Image (tube, rainbow, N blue to C red; front, side, top):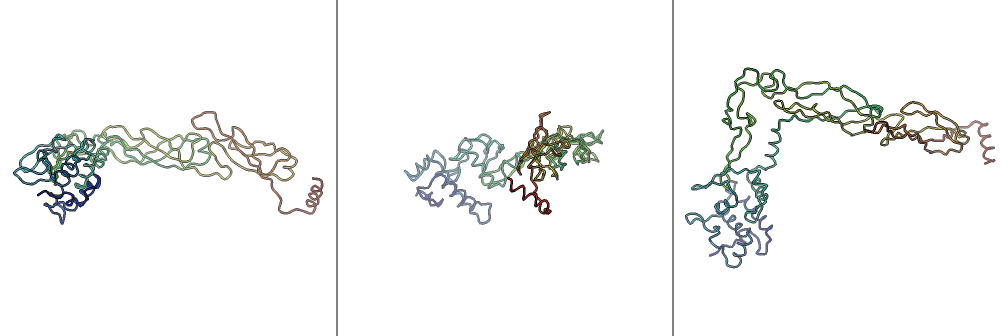
Length: 393
């Protein structure tokens, strides 16, 4: 009698492929034999049901005939035993499997496996990669991260530096002190001292890589990774450098002279090439990145490349006009106040602002806001004069 695959997966006959896949994953997690409370027989039934319902053609055959054609290999295994998975059928979809009695072995490169687009059982290899990651406890991202960590280039260094307002405007040269990894002078960055014997790495036996084998319900998988002892070189010194302990680098404090460009803004970053951490075994050094915070100024404010300030004048100066002295970044200048100037009037001093970054000779403007000061207390004479003035206006 044919099995009710829909009941086994707990879905209706109208379930979508996504619903079937989700139900299968949930049940496979629950009944996996290696987990506490798992059920091997139930797990096989779930697998068997999914390999039929998860494939559109086999599902159509099952819906019509109540079974699938035996040539596909889902209902019969070797020796007449039931099997939830025909591994030979799977192997045709992907090279690298070697079958033997009672199991299989593979040297799959999981980075390739998880990024392929070919479909198997109605799913992409990418989906299976996610599924394998759930079961096995690893992901391709971890392997890629591990590969990045093995890079020989030195690490970049980032720091934040606080500078004065005028240093940001006009630029400056400064000496900074940083802590960084520098090539070991004792071993010349090699990780071992002169005369040290180089031997075959005992961990990987000279291959530069190590293999790890893990047994899962899919079979025994073998993964390959870079040897942590020799870093993939296949050989190592018999004795590491006593100063750097084989790293080829030591941590030092170093003074570096930097040039702050005129016109630098808050949060902007400069790059100093080659002043990051030294690379491993003579490889290229990283870079130094410095971001800037700028202290505020008591008198001036900055708006892009423009400078903002304000000054006060009295009623007579506003009414009659005057010439007053204004402070700028370049020093004091004379500003003409026309007669009848209103409070809040803004005067523009062209070319007296901040130097424009990477444009020599070009600067922003200085904007001066004039505030007419109204006296809080007046003498009798001042009141009388203003009263007389008010009658004539």
